[in-house]
Length: 141
Image 1 (tube, helix red, strand yellow):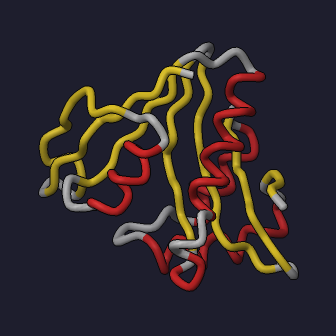
Image 2 (spheres, rainbow, N blue to C red):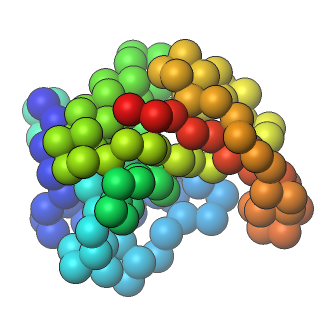
């Protein structure tokens, strides 16, 4: 089941952030999303959140800010399903272009994004922690 983020999910989202990212979003950053034009897609079964997508929508563009999937659910198409649902919702909001940044070293994620139709359109040098480059990817929907 895919649904939108609720305040009661905050603790579990923070837990997934710590599991998935070298620099997790802080609680205040996550809380601020309630008033921002964002989309949180959550996939859960038996009350456990498997993963989520955090994105920002401005006019006809969306930016995927975070894609996170618990380690034990990776390679089960969780991220694929979340991204497809996000794109469907973006399209319903009039979005034409979806951008994201991905670490140069994250080959698994890059492969997933390419499989879903995202193309590398640029590089942000030393984007992550001032050390690692990010590929900027784009998909027109």
